[in-house]
Image 1 (cartoon, rainbow, N blue to C red):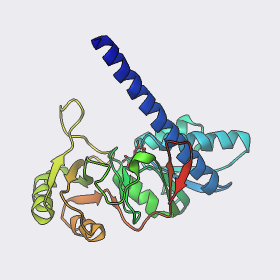
Image 2 (cartoon, rainbow, N blue to C red):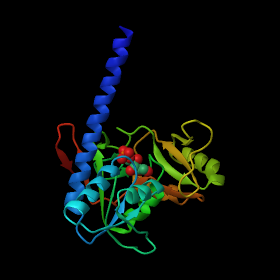
Image 3 (cartoon, rainbow, N blue to C red):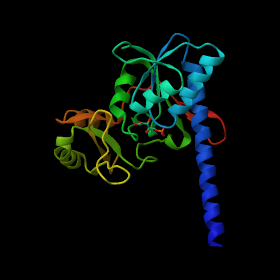
Image 4 (cartoon, rainbow, N blue to C red):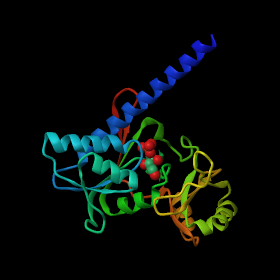
Length: 248
Ligand code: 5RP
């Protein structure tokens, strides 16, 4: 009986993972097909959903001779671009992008995003800000009315390592909640970003005016960037459980 229960739970988990992956793929393909055009300069986000977007760009490069150059938002994105045979550029050579595509941890009704679950928020925001259009791709679990409804890990804030304690104290005393240093999975030490910094995950305990909170946190000395993306997004594609795509 115990073995059967364990088997059921594993197969339920596998089904959920497969459904979520299918939703990510749907969103990614729809966004690439609508927004990526020949000759464009494209920002490539980070995370698991973006893999499906890069897969589609690579497919179209082969099938339709689509010709684009890609600018990454992380080491992971850079490797993905290279391993998919796409042309890698940087903001040094390509400072203005036609479009940037990226995942998100949560999207609220006003298009405010939480990003940085993978710790790449700073480069993601730089690339998004360099793009004429910023397009978000996500599975159905990321669609929310108010931030915090779906994503429980808090808002990531990238900080200079020596400033992490004062910043944690300021965030908690100014806004409430808890700002926790993100640790590596094996707990051997803090997660270090591609920029050599630490991440505080701020678990807020109420809904705030996100644009104001973002500005205030950003002004704290030692804060590099917040994972709040406000007024940056042009369109969001959600892959749904029923195999359709919802756009916001
Ligand atoms: C990384 C990010 C990711 O885009 C975000 O965490 C979503 O990831 P996934 O596509 O794996 O759900 O912001 O810093």
